[in-house]
Image (cartoon, rainbow, N blue to C red; front, side):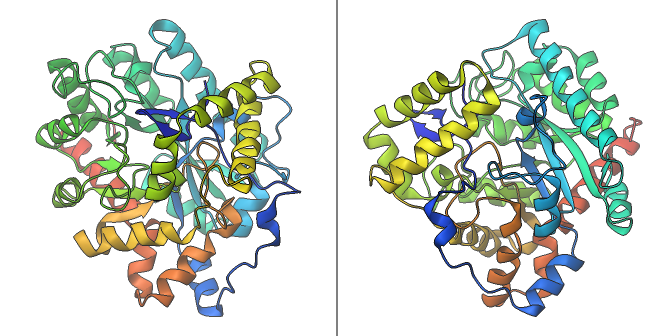
Length: 412
């Protein structure tokens, strides 16, 4: 099953977009980064709250320390783009449940920890806001983890606690299908939001000091979470439904409610969540997504990391052939700006979905991140507000969640 991609009849299909040596976008002129933008960007703490490179870490041939010509994330390109902290997603398809899901999640957690151990001069495992700040001072990249899908705890608060002990600092309550205790935005409602056990999960996360992530959940689940959680919550990789009608995006009312509780919406770069034109084209021809998925599976013989890269190549080919519309990176700025106009600069951040979604042209990998700072300055954003969006809001949210856990007598 491919990680994410085309939104077709409510199911996410497709894969990650990468920089390909023969791809047309390499011939496109890139925005000139002003000295002010450069200095501001690299003096800020830049945090990405959702990245799917974990799938590639499972491939023994993949070296995170090497600069790659595909995918979006590796150490050289994170350095070049000024990416200081990154949450690696622990992801298993929602159709994989029970002990197998727990075991596979543990394997991914181990892979992230091993990547840190193999690159001690560049990476450090972090679990708190202060540890991220310390990593920046020591010129290391902070590596964090988020579990993407509550099905991986196998209906066990003890497993949730175990993941926290291993370093996980947020959990997305659902992926694209319902869990036994929470409704997903990609499935038919089964629980009217959160079940009583789902509410226990939220309370336990508060006590542990683990951020509750509402990306992927149904709207009713979202409002149930806000009613139960003692701590502010995060949307680790969601965009604005007012600009693109994907069910995964948040309505204006949801963004306002999230912010009122102190939360942060982290804008997702996936073209299907940014562009209404892409959304419409995908829905008009759902066979395209099935073709992309099928061809990628055929080429890769079950290797998920390979499927992500091959799906990208096929998707880019479809754009070049005019079967799907081209989406520019500047639409990321449109979503940031929309959210800021709704709730202010204190409640917006970045959750790229690198290596797990179709990136817009001009934002193929982490090296392009300074363009965001440059564009926000050009729109008249103050340096202080830009620093909040780049990562300051995420650090504040983490601190708030940690404070609630201490108050509740938890681990943080």
